[in-house]
Amino acid sequence: MKILVTGSNGLLGQKIIYGLLGDPLCLIPGDVREKIRSEVQIIACGKGENRLHRKDGYLYEQLDITRKSEVENVFTKHKPDVVINTAAMTNVDACEIKREECWAANVTAMKYMVDVLGKWGAHLIHVSTDFVFDGMKGSAYDENDKPNPLHYYALSKLEGEKIVMQSKLKWAILRTIIVYGVVDGNTRSNLVLWVKNNLEKKQKINVINDQFRAPTLSEDLAKACIMAAMKRAEGIFHVSGEKTYNILELANIIADFWHLDKSYVNPVTSEQLNQPAKRPPRTGFVIEKAKKILGYTPRSFEEGLKIVDHQLKQ
Ligand SMILES: NC(=O)c1ccc[n+]([C@@H]2O[C@H](COP(=O)([O-])OP(=O)(O)OC[C@H]3O[C@@H](n4cnc5c(N)ncnc54)[C@H](OP(=O)(O)O)[C@@H]3O)[C@@H](O)[C@H]2O)c1
Image 1: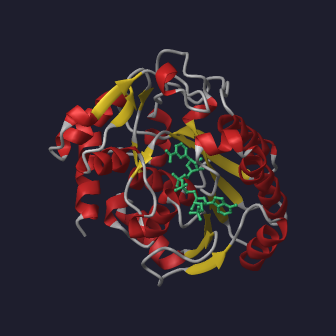
Image 2 (image 1 turned 135 degrees about the vertical axis):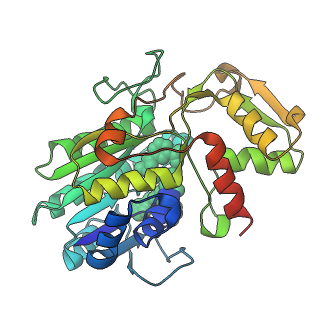
Image 3 (image 1 turned 180 degrees about the vertical axis):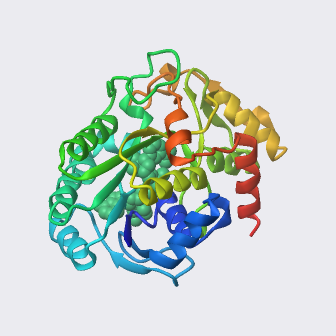
Protein backbone atom coordinates (compact mmCIF):
# COMPACT_ATOMS: atom_id res chain seq x y z
CA MET A 1 0.00 0.00 0.00
CA LYS A 2 1.31 3.44 -0.93
CA ILE A 3 0.35 6.60 0.96
CA LEU A 4 1.38 9.90 -0.60
CA VAL A 5 1.27 13.04 1.56
CA THR A 6 1.29 16.50 -0.02
CA GLY A 7 2.47 19.56 1.91
CA SER A 8 4.95 17.41 3.86
CA ASN A 9 7.00 20.46 4.91
CA GLY A 10 3.99 22.02 6.64
CA LEU A 11 2.90 21.56 10.24
CA LEU A 12 0.35 18.82 9.61
CA GLY A 13 2.31 17.25 6.74
CA GLN A 14 5.39 16.80 8.94
CA LYS A 15 3.39 15.25 11.75
CA ILE A 16 1.70 12.81 9.37
CA ILE A 17 5.05 11.66 7.99
CA TYR A 18 6.44 11.21 11.51
CA GLY A 19 3.22 9.48 12.55
CA LEU A 20 3.50 7.05 9.64
CA LEU A 21 7.12 6.46 10.63
CA GLY A 22 5.93 5.44 14.11
CA ASP A 23 6.07 8.60 16.27
CA PRO A 24 4.43 7.44 19.53
CA LEU A 25 3.01 10.95 20.11
CA CYS A 26 0.48 10.29 17.33
CA LEU A 27 -1.06 7.55 19.48
CA ILE A 28 -1.67 5.21 16.53
CA PRO A 29 -2.94 1.88 17.91
CA GLY A 30 -0.32 -0.89 17.91
CA ASP A 31 -1.99 -3.10 15.31
CA VAL A 32 -2.34 -0.20 12.87
CA ARG A 33 1.24 0.88 13.53
CA GLU A 34 2.44 -2.63 12.75
CA LYS A 35 0.39 -2.70 9.55
CA ILE A 36 1.89 0.61 8.47
CA ARG A 37 5.40 -0.59 9.32
CA SER A 38 5.07 -3.78 7.34
CA GLU A 39 2.82 -2.75 4.45
CA VAL A 40 2.94 0.96 3.75
CA GLN A 41 5.31 2.78 1.47
CA ILE A 42 5.39 6.48 2.36
CA ILE A 43 5.84 9.19 -0.26
CA ALA A 44 6.29 12.70 1.14
CA CYS A 45 5.76 15.59 -1.27
CA GLY A 46 6.63 19.19 -0.48
CA LYS A 47 7.25 22.42 -2.29
CA GLY A 48 11.02 22.82 -2.66
CA GLU A 49 13.61 21.02 -0.57
CA ASN A 50 12.66 18.46 2.07
CA ARG A 51 12.62 20.30 5.43
CA LEU A 52 12.00 17.25 7.60
CA HIS A 53 15.01 16.47 9.79
CA ARG A 54 14.53 12.75 9.38
CA LYS A 55 15.28 11.70 5.81
CA ASP A 56 15.02 7.90 5.97
CA GLY A 57 12.05 5.55 5.86
CA TYR A 58 10.19 7.33 3.07
CA LEU A 59 10.61 8.73 -0.43
CA TYR A 60 10.61 12.47 -1.02
CA GLU A 61 9.37 14.23 -4.15
CA GLN A 62 9.30 17.95 -4.83
CA LEU A 63 5.77 18.86 -5.81
CA ASP A 64 4.12 22.21 -6.39
CA ILE A 65 0.43 21.29 -6.50
CA THR A 66 -0.41 24.34 -8.63
CA ARG A 67 1.65 22.87 -11.49
CA LYS A 68 -0.56 20.46 -13.37
CA SER A 69 2.29 18.57 -15.01
CA GLU A 70 4.06 18.07 -11.65
CA VAL A 71 0.88 16.68 -10.09
CA GLU A 72 0.39 14.35 -13.05
CA ASN A 73 4.02 13.21 -13.15
CA VAL A 74 4.53 12.62 -9.41
CA PHE A 75 1.16 10.96 -8.86
CA THR A 76 1.44 8.77 -11.97
CA LYS A 77 5.00 7.77 -11.10
CA HIS A 78 3.94 6.36 -7.72
CA LYS A 79 0.25 5.52 -8.30
CA PRO A 80 -0.59 5.91 -4.58
CA ASP A 81 -3.51 4.01 -3.09
CA VAL A 82 -4.19 6.92 -0.74
CA VAL A 83 -3.29 10.61 -1.02
CA ILE A 84 -3.48 12.80 2.08
CA ASN A 85 -3.64 16.38 0.85
CA THR A 86 -2.40 18.83 3.47
CA ALA A 87 -0.90 21.31 0.99
CA ALA A 88 -2.77 24.58 0.83
CA MET A 89 -2.30 28.31 0.97
CA THR A 90 -3.12 28.69 4.64
CA ASN A 91 -2.44 32.35 5.47
CA VAL A 92 -5.98 33.70 5.67
CA ASP A 93 -5.17 37.38 5.23
CA ALA A 94 -2.69 36.70 2.41
CA CYS A 95 -5.46 34.75 0.63
CA GLU A 96 -7.71 37.80 0.87
CA ILE A 97 -5.11 39.88 -0.95
CA LYS A 98 -3.41 37.36 -3.28
CA ARG A 99 -6.62 35.82 -4.56
CA GLU A 100 -5.26 34.16 -7.70
CA GLU A 101 -2.49 32.42 -5.77
CA CYS A 102 -5.01 31.24 -3.18
CA TRP A 103 -7.42 29.88 -5.81
CA ALA A 104 -4.61 28.09 -7.62
CA ALA A 105 -3.48 26.20 -4.48
CA ASN A 106 -6.81 25.61 -2.77
CA VAL A 107 -9.14 25.04 -5.73
CA THR A 108 -7.52 24.50 -9.14
CA ALA A 109 -4.92 22.12 -7.68
CA MET A 110 -7.76 19.96 -6.33
CA LYS A 111 -9.04 19.55 -9.86
CA TYR A 112 -5.58 18.45 -11.03
CA MET A 113 -5.45 15.92 -8.20
CA VAL A 114 -8.88 14.34 -8.64
CA ASP A 115 -8.43 14.13 -12.41
CA VAL A 116 -5.20 12.17 -12.24
CA LEU A 117 -6.18 10.04 -9.22
CA GLY A 118 -9.38 9.06 -11.03
CA LYS A 119 -7.27 7.12 -13.51
CA TRP A 120 -6.63 4.34 -10.97
CA GLY A 121 -9.23 5.20 -8.34
CA ALA A 122 -7.07 6.35 -5.41
CA HIS A 123 -8.63 7.31 -2.09
CA LEU A 124 -8.27 11.03 -1.32
CA ILE A 125 -8.09 12.33 2.25
CA HIS A 126 -8.41 16.10 2.09
CA VAL A 127 -7.97 18.61 4.92
CA SER A 128 -10.26 21.60 5.29
CA THR A 129 -11.26 24.20 7.85
CA ASP A 130 -13.84 25.40 10.37
CA PHE A 131 -13.76 28.68 8.45
CA VAL A 132 -16.19 27.21 5.89
CA PHE A 133 -18.80 28.16 8.55
CA ASP A 134 -19.88 31.71 9.36
CA GLY A 135 -19.62 31.18 13.13
CA MET A 136 -23.13 32.49 13.81
CA LYS A 137 -24.66 29.20 15.01
CA GLY A 138 -23.73 29.89 18.61
CA SER A 139 -22.64 26.33 19.34
CA ALA A 140 -20.33 23.62 17.95
CA TYR A 141 -20.75 22.64 14.30
CA ASP A 142 -21.39 19.07 13.17
CA GLU A 143 -20.78 17.55 9.76
CA ASN A 144 -24.35 18.25 8.59
CA ASP A 145 -24.27 21.99 9.25
CA LYS A 146 -24.41 24.23 6.25
CA PRO A 147 -21.23 26.11 5.30
CA ASN A 148 -21.34 29.84 4.67
CA PRO A 149 -17.81 31.17 4.07
CA LEU A 150 -17.07 34.74 5.16
CA HIS A 151 -13.76 35.34 3.38
CA TYR A 152 -11.74 34.32 0.35
CA TYR A 153 -9.64 31.62 2.04
CA ALA A 154 -12.84 30.03 3.39
CA LEU A 155 -14.52 30.26 0.01
CA SER A 156 -11.50 28.66 -1.67
CA LYS A 157 -11.42 25.82 0.87
CA LEU A 158 -15.14 25.20 0.40
CA GLU A 159 -14.72 25.12 -3.39
CA GLY A 160 -11.84 22.68 -2.93
CA GLU A 161 -14.13 20.49 -0.81
CA LYS A 162 -16.79 20.54 -3.53
CA ILE A 163 -14.30 19.33 -6.15
CA VAL A 164 -13.39 16.42 -3.88
CA MET A 165 -17.04 15.60 -3.09
CA GLN A 166 -18.13 15.78 -6.72
CA SER A 167 -15.27 13.55 -7.89
CA LYS A 168 -15.70 9.86 -8.57
CA LEU A 169 -12.97 9.04 -6.06
CA LYS A 170 -13.46 7.57 -2.64
CA TRP A 171 -12.84 10.53 -0.36
CA ALA A 172 -12.80 11.83 3.18
CA ILE A 173 -12.65 15.48 4.17
CA LEU A 174 -11.26 16.28 7.62
CA ARG A 175 -12.11 19.79 8.76
CA THR A 176 -10.02 21.19 11.57
CA ILE A 177 -9.52 24.29 13.76
CA ILE A 178 -6.42 26.29 14.87
CA VAL A 179 -3.69 23.67 14.62
CA TYR A 180 -0.70 24.06 16.94
CA GLY A 181 2.58 22.20 17.30
CA VAL A 182 6.29 22.41 16.64
CA VAL A 183 7.82 21.79 13.21
CA ASP A 184 11.39 20.78 12.40
CA GLY A 185 13.62 23.85 12.32
CA ASN A 186 10.87 25.93 13.98
CA THR A 187 10.04 27.45 10.59
CA ARG A 188 6.31 27.85 11.22
CA SER A 189 4.41 29.74 13.86
CA ASN A 190 0.91 29.28 15.24
CA LEU A 191 -1.20 30.75 18.03
CA VAL A 192 0.68 28.96 20.83
CA LEU A 193 4.18 29.85 19.61
CA TRP A 194 3.16 33.40 18.66
CA VAL A 195 1.88 34.14 22.16
CA LYS A 196 4.83 32.42 23.86
CA ASN A 197 7.52 34.03 21.68
CA ASN A 198 6.14 37.55 21.99
CA LEU A 199 5.56 37.41 25.72
CA GLU A 200 9.06 36.03 26.25
CA LYS A 201 10.40 39.09 24.41
CA LYS A 202 8.07 41.30 26.47
CA GLN A 203 6.35 42.47 23.32
CA LYS A 204 2.75 43.60 23.53
CA ILE A 205 0.28 41.48 21.52
CA ASN A 206 -3.24 42.35 20.50
CA VAL A 207 -5.42 39.32 21.23
CA ILE A 208 -9.01 38.98 20.10
CA ASN A 209 -11.51 38.75 22.95
CA ASP A 210 -14.70 38.06 20.99
CA GLN A 211 -13.85 34.94 18.97
CA PHE A 212 -14.08 31.31 20.08
CA ARG A 213 -12.15 28.30 18.75
CA ALA A 214 -11.26 24.70 19.68
CA PRO A 215 -7.46 24.40 19.29
CA THR A 216 -6.14 21.17 17.79
CA LEU A 217 -2.83 19.50 18.60
CA SER A 218 -1.05 18.71 15.32
CA GLU A 219 -0.24 15.13 16.42
CA ASP A 220 -3.93 14.50 17.19
CA LEU A 221 -4.95 15.71 13.74
CA ALA A 222 -2.17 13.65 12.14
CA LYS A 223 -3.56 10.59 13.89
CA ALA A 224 -7.03 11.28 12.48
CA CYS A 225 -5.60 11.64 8.95
CA ILE A 226 -3.58 8.44 9.25
CA MET A 227 -6.54 6.49 10.67
CA ALA A 228 -8.75 7.82 7.87
CA ALA A 229 -6.18 6.59 5.35
CA MET A 230 -5.74 3.18 6.97
CA LYS A 231 -9.48 2.64 7.48
CA ARG A 232 -10.29 4.01 4.03
CA ALA A 233 -12.83 6.24 5.75
CA GLU A 234 -15.34 8.12 3.65
CA GLY A 235 -17.33 11.31 4.21
CA ILE A 236 -16.83 14.50 6.19
CA PHE A 237 -15.20 14.42 9.64
CA HIS A 238 -14.89 17.24 12.14
CA VAL A 239 -11.55 16.95 13.91
CA SER A 240 -10.52 19.46 16.58
CA GLY A 241 -9.76 19.78 20.25
CA GLU A 242 -12.67 18.81 22.47
CA LYS A 243 -13.15 22.18 24.12
CA THR A 244 -13.91 25.61 22.66
CA TYR A 245 -12.24 28.66 24.22
CA ASN A 246 -12.28 32.39 23.85
CA ILE A 247 -8.99 33.24 22.08
CA LEU A 248 -8.09 35.68 24.86
CA GLU A 249 -8.56 32.84 27.37
CA LEU A 250 -6.23 30.68 25.26
CA ALA A 251 -3.56 33.39 25.32
CA ASN A 252 -3.86 33.61 29.10
CA ILE A 253 -3.58 29.83 29.49
CA ILE A 254 -0.45 29.85 27.30
CA ALA A 255 1.04 32.71 29.34
CA ASP A 256 0.31 30.93 32.62
CA PHE A 257 1.72 27.64 31.35
CA TRP A 258 5.13 29.22 30.65
CA HIS A 259 4.88 31.67 33.62
CA LEU A 260 4.92 34.70 31.33
CA ASP A 261 3.74 38.22 32.09
CA LYS A 262 0.12 38.56 30.97
CA SER A 263 0.24 42.34 31.13
CA TYR A 264 1.65 42.24 27.57
CA VAL A 265 -1.61 40.64 26.36
CA ASN A 266 -3.78 43.48 25.11
CA PRO A 267 -7.43 42.39 24.62
CA VAL A 268 -9.03 43.78 21.46
CA THR A 269 -12.32 43.23 19.67
CA SER A 270 -12.51 41.90 16.10
CA GLU A 271 -13.65 45.35 15.06
CA GLN A 272 -10.61 47.00 16.62
CA LEU A 273 -8.19 44.48 15.08
CA ASN A 274 -9.77 44.96 11.65
CA GLN A 275 -8.04 42.06 9.88
CA PRO A 276 -8.30 41.98 6.07
CA ALA A 277 -10.41 38.78 6.26
CA LYS A 278 -13.43 38.83 8.59
CA ARG A 279 -13.33 35.77 10.93
CA PRO A 280 -16.34 33.76 12.14
CA PRO A 281 -17.10 34.72 15.76
CA ARG A 282 -17.57 31.20 17.14
CA THR A 283 -16.72 27.80 15.68
CA GLY A 284 -15.85 24.62 17.60
CA PHE A 285 -16.82 21.14 16.44
CA VAL A 286 -18.92 18.17 17.46
CA ILE A 287 -16.24 15.47 17.12
CA GLU A 288 -18.23 12.34 17.94
CA LYS A 289 -18.10 10.94 14.39
CA ALA A 290 -14.29 11.20 14.26
CA LYS A 291 -14.04 9.57 17.70
CA LYS A 292 -16.31 6.71 16.71
CA ILE A 293 -15.07 5.97 13.20
CA LEU A 294 -11.45 7.13 13.26
CA GLY A 295 -10.71 6.31 16.90
CA TYR A 296 -9.86 9.99 17.31
CA THR A 297 -8.64 10.76 20.84
CA PRO A 298 -7.84 14.48 21.26
CA ARG A 299 -5.69 15.57 24.15
CA SER A 300 -6.65 18.51 26.33
CA PHE A 301 -5.10 21.91 25.58
CA GLU A 302 -2.96 21.62 28.71
CA GLU A 303 -1.66 18.21 27.61
CA GLY A 304 -0.94 19.66 24.17
CA LEU A 305 1.08 22.50 25.71
CA LYS A 306 3.16 19.97 27.66
CA ILE A 307 3.98 18.19 24.38
CA VAL A 308 4.90 21.49 22.70
CA ASP A 309 7.10 22.43 25.66
CA HIS A 310 8.88 19.10 25.54
CA GLN A 311 9.47 19.39 21.77
CA LEU A 312 10.83 22.92 22.07
CA LYS A 313 13.43 21.69 24.56
CA GLN A 314 14.68 18.88 22.30
N1 LIG B 1 -3.13 25.59 10.69
C1 LIG B 1 -4.40 25.80 11.00
O1 LIG B 1 -4.69 26.45 12.00
C2 LIG B 1 -5.49 25.20 10.16
C3 LIG B 1 -6.82 25.40 10.54
C4 LIG B 1 -7.82 24.86 9.75
C5 LIG B 1 -7.49 24.14 8.62
N2 LIG B 1 -6.19 23.97 8.27
C6 LIG B 1 -5.89 23.20 7.05
O2 LIG B 1 -4.99 22.17 7.41
C7 LIG B 1 -4.15 21.87 6.29
C8 LIG B 1 -2.71 21.81 6.76
O3 LIG B 1 -2.34 23.08 7.25
P1 LIG B 1 -1.04 23.33 8.10
O4 LIG B 1 -1.47 23.81 9.42
O5 LIG B 1 -0.14 22.16 8.04
O6 LIG B 1 -0.44 24.56 7.30
P2 LIG B 1 1.02 24.84 6.82
O7 LIG B 1 1.99 24.59 7.90
O8 LIG B 1 0.94 26.21 6.21
O9 LIG B 1 1.25 23.76 5.69
C9 LIG B 1 0.78 23.89 4.40
C10 LIG B 1 1.83 23.34 3.47
O10 LIG B 1 1.35 23.50 2.13
C11 LIG B 1 2.45 23.84 1.36
N3 LIG B 1 2.06 24.46 0.12
C12 LIG B 1 1.54 25.69 -0.07
N4 LIG B 1 1.37 25.91 -1.40
C13 LIG B 1 1.79 24.79 -2.02
C14 LIG B 1 1.91 24.41 -3.36
N5 LIG B 1 1.54 25.23 -4.35
N6 LIG B 1 2.40 23.19 -3.65
C15 LIG B 1 2.79 22.36 -2.68
N7 LIG B 1 2.73 22.67 -1.38
C16 LIG B 1 2.24 23.87 -1.06
C17 LIG B 1 3.29 24.76 2.21
O11 LIG B 1 4.59 24.79 1.67
P3 LIG B 1 5.75 25.69 2.30
O12 LIG B 1 6.02 25.09 3.65
O13 LIG B 1 6.90 25.52 1.37
O14 LIG B 1 5.20 27.07 2.39
C18 LIG B 1 3.16 24.10 3.56
O15 LIG B 1 4.21 23.19 3.76
C19 LIG B 1 -4.47 22.91 5.23
O16 LIG B 1 -5.34 22.33 4.30
C20 LIG B 1 -5.19 24.00 5.97
O17 LIG B 1 -6.08 24.68 5.14
C21 LIG B 1 -5.17 24.48 9.02
